[in-house]
View 1 (cartoon, rainbow, N blue to C red):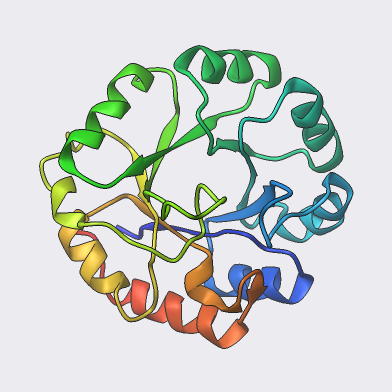
View 2 (view 1 turned 180 degrees about the vertical axis):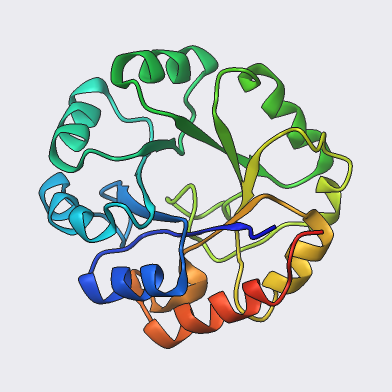
Length: 216
């Protein structure tokens, strides 16, 4: 069964074309001013038609208010919202009800005990993104190029639908898939030549490495 692959932090048509050409199931656009991958709603709206009917467009936000989400949804009509901040289960439910869109909730993981964070969101979030905890000096909740011990995911309830993120590259994605067996993976910095600058050959290499390992 093919896994879902999300290329996140896209900013250019060239990078988006590479992601879609590789067979991305999801493409992510980030709306967070502190990120080198930040886009305006208008910029994302200009790119979004390229992915229409080819991959799910995901709008990634961090503790965004309704006014910000309103502008994003109006400008780009995303297929899914990804909440990558400290949003509560109640906030996730409110966002789902307001926009009628599926929500992927990102949670930071560093040790097995962190998996307990999923429990309050079960039945509310449509999907999870399990990302590595950011370094203490980082202002970014994700896209830091760091990973975590994937073996702690082996005991996770297989019914929980999640994407694995954090420090994935063409060199380690095969091991990550074999150990964690997620239904999807998410990569951003691992396919960049510098922060926020996607590298087309690295995107292609990532797809080749990921596709070489099929989920049992």
